[in-house]
Image (cartoon, rainbow, N blue to C red):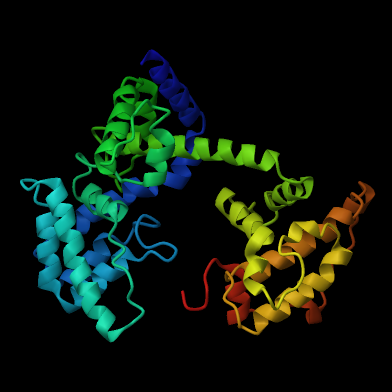
Length: 371
């Protein structure tokens, strides 16, 4: 057990060393909980509006990507406010067994979605999984719950000596509790945590959200380690493209983040498979290692995408152009010092300015047109 504790302390040391970045990226969780506390009123006559307002600062904890748990609940509340009020009243009733509360809540939303399917075939899921429900519970009782995420549990549990069980929510609670037991003994850490919490934040008196944040940080460390191992076996051009994407000026003055880089690389590797049989080239575009040989492939792929016969990721056209730009820059000689000291102004031709429209927007985001 002492070895596990030492691993935990090492992770906490890394957490403190990276505290400024973590705070900038994760502080929204404490803000979101405080915002909920200031807005939640179970007896509100305008229940749907209150529900949407209370969870409005979740950022990416609920509706993100294709998952829309909050959207489903608000839609449900707009049609049947008393039903949803009753579901939340039961979910938040701490006198009832947690497993029963969760199953009843899921079943209640499922009945609504089943009815909606009869009118709108696009309604396919409630999105009320353990993660979403843990958000509701944590926002309501941050002194009792943690925001659950399976990927965090899977990555962090072995690090902290927690054995995985079928009861994932309970196991996750054990994980975060074990982290909290060690974290609260670090007075420097707890002082740093309190120092970042302004009046707009939940004050986290029991350090439960801090423990949850360290669990997520552990997951991110494990993920980066696995990615590094995976990239070590990839061709040099993949590594070069990754480095190119991570340059500070690449994304409107900022580097692309870890998740975006991972998605872009995966798209270069296999998104072209969706354009078969129309596309007859190699679907792993990293096999095209010069701008000259990639140019005809780029033209062909963009034409196929424009036909809209096959649904590819909305960001794919942008990724294709980025890869083409990378290949061109990769072949250019490094600029001399003299070339960087010229006082001549840069003139941009008006004909080179691309109109910003719906298609341009879809090229730049991780969404399809329907999303």
